[in-house]
Amino acid sequence: MTHPAAGGLAGPPRFPSPYDQGPGAQTANLADILERVLDKGVVIAGDIRINLLDIELLTIKLRLLVASVDKAKEMGIDWWEHDPSLSSRAARTERSLADENERLRAEIAALRAAERSPEP
Image 1 (tube, rainbow, N blue to C red):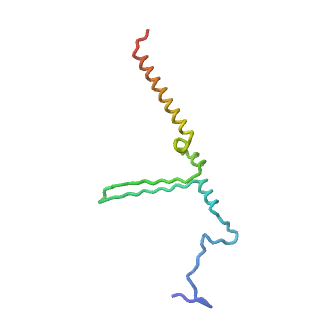
Image 2: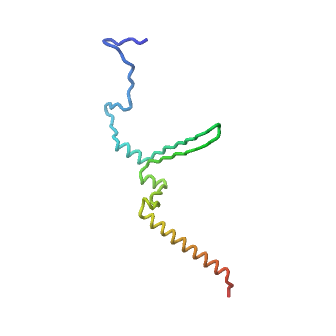
Image 3: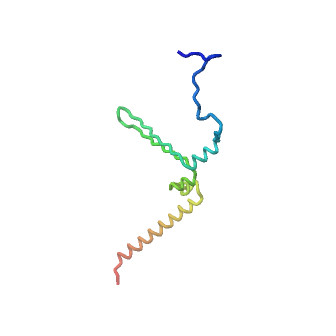
């Protein structure tokens, strides 16, 4: 049983909230929070499994990385630079790979031809 406080009814005890702005507290706006998240990076991972009578029917693995471009490059992630639909440089890279492939095929053919022909 709770007892009413002097001069009125007492409500439930109020605990300090982490969102309360007390003296000396700094406000963090959305830009500050976003800057911190992009600077450090955030990984969200989860798996969805659908089983029927202990038989796994479907598994979906979800991975989400939120980071700045600089942080992603620092981690070795740069797939957008090689995707022709996202980068104009990717098309040139793709063409140079095709050229290199043709050159290597020609070298292999020349080596095979030299291997077949008798040496003088």
